[in-house]
Amino acid sequence: MTDTAAAPVPPAADPAFTPPGLGRRFGALVIDWVLCLMVARSFADPVRDGWPPVLVLILEYGFFLGLFAQTPGMYLTRLRCVAWADGGRIGLARGLLRGLLLALVVPALIMDEHRRGLHDRLTGAVVTDAPRR
Image (tube, rainbow, N blue to C red):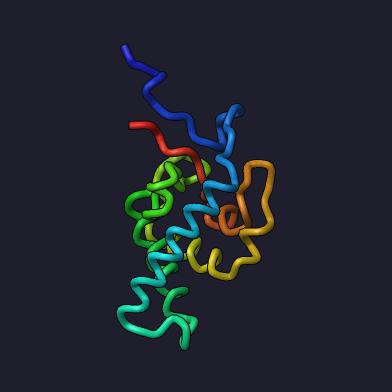
């Protein structure tokens, strides 16, 4: 006998899917940006050179989303970024691409009814609530 309630329903197949609020998403981004500024400061002057924190953000997104489905900011705000189609991890390549597109800012401002920005749609991702532990 299998327990169908134990298997999570992918966001794309869940008609009751409700995306998390923009406040938590923005909070996660602010936390991640502050961390990126702190890391970039260890090898460059973020005030003089604007690119090091952006590069760190892209790498942070690729690494953390690809392997853990959460950046440190997402972890603290109880969010995760998963594949739209199956609810699994998006992987390193799509995590890096999502970080690059997010660094361009404009794609994040154009959202659909599931609060998926262009950076989410182009990488097949969605931000969801993290499961409670």
